[in-house]
Image (cartoon, rainbow, N blue to C red; front, top):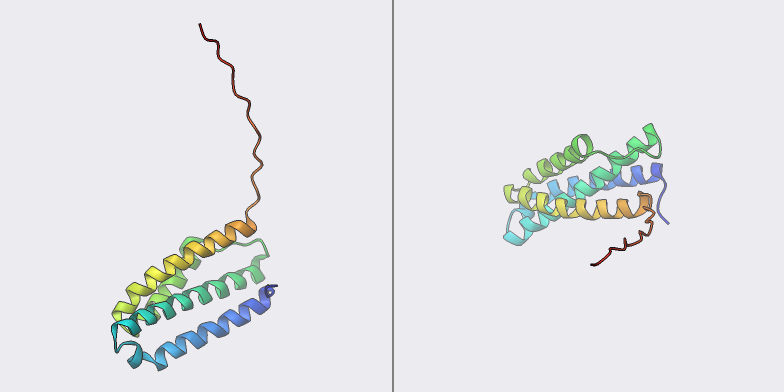
Length: 133
């Protein structure tokens, strides 16, 4: 069972701070090799996911349970913040952060659609009979 909105906001905010601070503490190690810079991008995409969760939960607490995060203010802002945090580590981390964040966003959207979208009732249609001469 998942957390409630308030608890999820607290946990995702805490995880955002932990991921950002660990990226800053291990900045030299993350920039030391190619694989670690890719790992820095993965950490940046994790930061994006945590920031988006915290932002969405905060809005749900303030505006009601049916409020949804939109692309322009929330998603773009969280993506910009995560890419900026990755850019503080290494410039290649920005690119990998963006790529992995787009993959995260695809699966977040897929999960959200499966959970919150109302099922579409399909009505069977009868095939029309045509006359042949």
